[in-house]
Image (cartoon, rainbow, N blue to C red):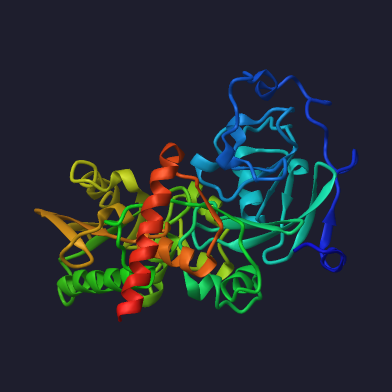
Length: 402
């Protein structure tokens, strides 16, 4: 669909010797130059009809490509990306570029941030390819890449949480809207199949957040009117990700959140200023702390009594409550499952930033891709596609009978 008229209205990127340093020139020999030839980049990381590679930095070498795409800043996607990177240009969102530069110390000359929702033309094998970054509804800076290669349309979702409201009914015009309205066809869909199993039926993010707010309110009621009762709330998170749940709780109750200096530095380049106002690096100012997800267990959590109660004359915490926001914590009875042991509690919340199985099926129903390419557990891709198509048929049967 990238006809001559479209080419005139989009930004154009061409590779010339002045735009980016050529791999290996002016640099010491890097480990990328010594990659074994049998380390072949898997097909699900290559975009059909181009030399583009998405989230495939482990396989980087001069003979592969000079066009790399990074969907978001999670280690299973940027893995292999080192400070001495010199294999070509990396296309990504601005927040992700900021993180790669700040945290991985990759030279800025190799980073090319793409403007969200703005078609941009990048040359591949001497031919123009239109690329558009779309919100992936995952972690801050996460994007989907929409490629238009001649008359062919391809969507690579990276990691995503499918949402019609965000992806089809947003304020900005999106190629996905054209596909859903059948004004454009989707030839290939590179799909995040993290929850490609019928058992993974998760509540929406909004419902999971609402349930967490209710649970948090119950904990506050316990301390109400009793100055001797004080609860420390620990929210589990990754390097980036899960911000939406703890910031929603803080905003709802008019509280601020403690994060360590390393996390604050990371979040400062990806979150808007209004969100940063809810964060502090001073433990004494907050009863909500963000901690590594791995710390939310009955063995590790008691250590936080010593950390939080170390200041003399400060009111002591007598209870610690942990919140584990992960899609793997689904339960048949209610939204949140809880464990209690003395003055400790852990609430597991099925809050996820990956699409649930019904959402994957809904994505297929809306976009109707001619081909599905799973990107998680790719060795089981045929099986995953069969499961998804079965789910789609079952959904259509239910709709016909209802």
